[in-house]
Image 1 (cartoon, rainbow, N blue to C red):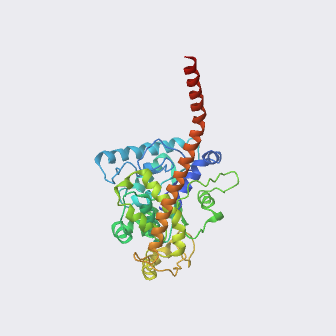
Image 2 (tube, one colour):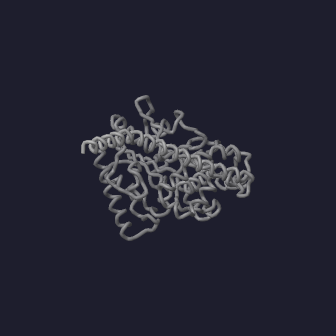
Image 3 (cartoon, rainbow, N blue to C red):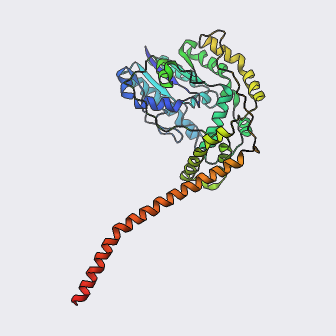
Length: 378
């Protein structure tokens, strides 16, 4: 049987690392009968490594707005992508695609996704296998907001406003979402993995993912470090949030420069002021809301009756407060990091100028000498 493995996220569970790993090792995967294809689609908000984007792509524009034209394009992309996958099954028994946006889109703008995909799979003679990584709900929310503040150049929304704005059920009701997928493709065709405390089969997310699709991590696979997806901690996220309101942050280079200076301070700030965005009581209440459903996932999808889906230990940390006594330290630290960087860049430029002058001066002496000679001859 030909199998389409669809990795659907969730967001903030190492999805980018998995995608880059599969791209980097595409030749090795092909040798084992697996294809991680680069498909001929271009989306403004997704790299080519997100090769499942066509399942929900072409629907939203750069501002997050839908249009009739983009919806029509999405339908064309969907059927074109499915046809390309069918063509790949002529050479491979397994095709692997991945995009974290599916997790949210399948309950918002693509509610018919699994029925449509199942219909195409049945008609074209392949089966569907879904892989999903889950993270404890409170950690997921914080990581999602942190990523938005870090990456969005003009987002200056507070954590509370962000939580009020997003569609919580479509993101956090893990069990109900899995059940809706299972109702179409069958529970036996869904693999659930934990993304919590490094609890990975084989000791890494790469080994874990390969195991989920029926392979084993060996020395032949390459694992590049790539660019670490660093977060902002302590008070640095608040500094970045406020700076996001500046119009100059719309410049990508300016935005990156500011973010890198904050990264230099983030680890120190986290050690000086370890904190959470919610109080211990608020975290406990949130986990209580989903405790029953999380237990069902452990029992029904992980075959672990009586076990918890996540480690529900709550750290004994204070809730972050804007007027905390460490804020002034972090502001000074950030200003210092900016000043030191500019000073060091200035010194590099001065050195380059001196080196250029050292090269130019001998020629200037030669020119003056020749001028004197020519004048003397006259």
